[in-house]
Image 1: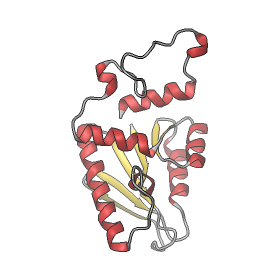
Image 2 (image 1 turned 120 degrees about the vertical axis):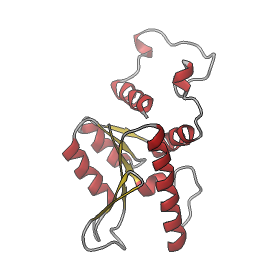
Image 3 (image 1 turned 45 degrees about the horizontal axis):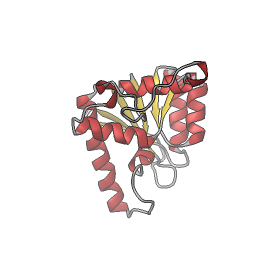
Image 4 (image 1 turned 30 degrees about the horizontal axis):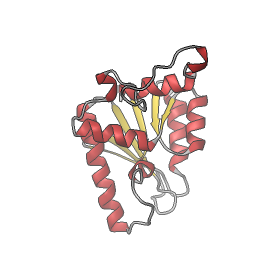
Length: 172
């Protein structure tokens, strides 16, 4: 499984909005890479993190590999969204994209891939790194309260999109 992460989107997941200074931003990027690397050790998969470089980036796209994670910094004038779309076109339907950007999520789903919100993945990453058991390992579906009523009947069936999302979350 290939996991493509919208870096700044995940970086800001679960925190109050506010601008970071350049030195704080670099420190937060490094911290995010450490967290994703720790996640990768508990759930082996191929991970690519995309960061925006469109305002202050370099003339060409920059790629590097750190701690088992592929990092891509988009070139000056190119948004991370465009890089994510390009990778989804290249890699196809087996990709899981972590983003809270609705436009990107819609694009990803039209291509047959799966989009997971940054907040959902942030929680999964936190649980994997702290070695907390996943709810489905206890027999509980994510987002369903323990001891809640069981849904029955065709009107209670999950949509294909929701089934695909839950399958992707189980793999994470």
